[in-house]
Image (cartoon, rainbow, N blue to C red; front, side, top):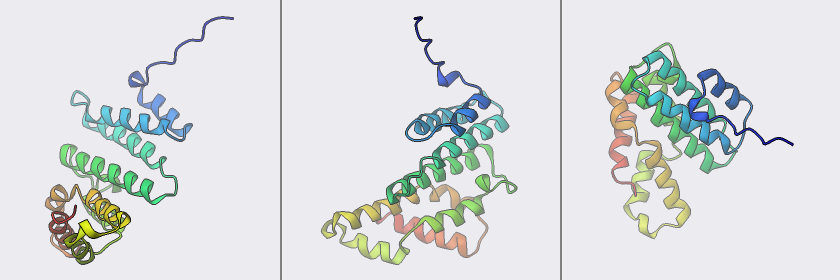
Length: 175
């Protein structure tokens, strides 16, 4: 019997190879694909459209990591929001693509939050005395709003922007 050939280094894969891998993979291997695709998106030596395509693959791999738990929902959303915000900031918004549209990101962010700003602020006031589960929910709200400081600058005045400004202020109170 011959020796098994080592698998090719996934960091050298083409966009098409990575796309095929993501489409045929599940579980924890998708995290590796997410990180590798994101690394290509961050590569300054690539053209902007190429970087957006790699970012899309990272989002696709990330979304495949959803497993039905609240922890996974929050983790996937937080990773997605940060990458989408990075693309909007670094490569510019694109109103024709919801992934790179600041208004769409704002709406998705608000939909992901499970507390109101008032409730989060009230809980944060005495967070050290809360049960661990409640502290975790506060941390999730904080993680899901990490990109707001950059996002509000891309939004037109209106109720969505004001809601995110309120959340950005509330975020400072969270543990």
